[in-house]
Image 1 (cartoon, rainbow, N blue to C red):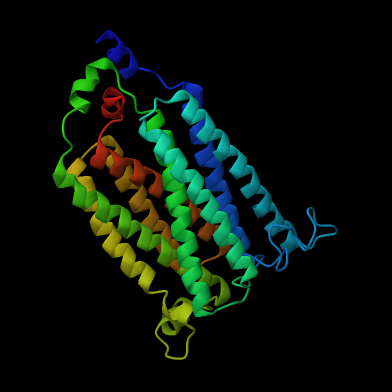
Image 2 (cartoon, helix red, strand yellow):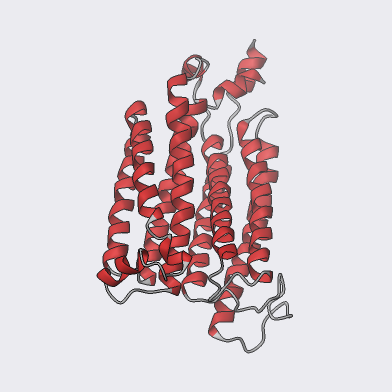
Length: 318
């Protein structure tokens, strides 16, 4: 019994938990810089070459678009090493059935698909001024994978730091509240849809900037507008549905974390309104995306607690 108890309270090094959150924060920066690439039309800055840049490992006498795109690829390369380090360290420090291990592996797989989708965007020519339906689909798929990747990293960090004291273990062994399953999954899935449609709306704002608020609304419903523009209304519509789903979860949980999620959700709506009223300048798009990333991280952690409770139950089952 003493051995089981000792295994149950095996502590994850705080430095590993801190490193995991640093990896999360770094990848938020990578995502934001990816938005800069899109907003500045620099997606083809390295030509139709991947992973090389214009056929070179390091570009010579690059133009601004090349610098922006190459910086994003370089940051993504650093991210790969950071994530690999996180996976290795997590497997070394965590017990065999610790959930953080599974989240770390998922983040590694999603990082690979993220790189693959980035290559498809470049090699397929779905960059710069491409307004094809295929680009709309690829943009949505890419951003969805980005959210899943960031979510997996966030769960890795969250679960690494989620080992309670012995006094909390009995409570953590209790069955989860099944009434939270539907609200949690609805909030997560709805938010993914909001994010995917938001990436399409941001692309439309970049390629087809509006001269005024009224002109923007008119183009959204004009029959001769490109598909990208006519899809902009889907994002705010999805945001309303997502809002209802998340509030459902927040009101069911009523914890400190749930109120944080609600506050970040309110901030996102304020930033979205500012984005529309200011006609989507690049800086507000970046701030809006930053808010979305922070909100998504908090929501994923809240949903994990609603669905699976504390990690000590896994440690005790070891």
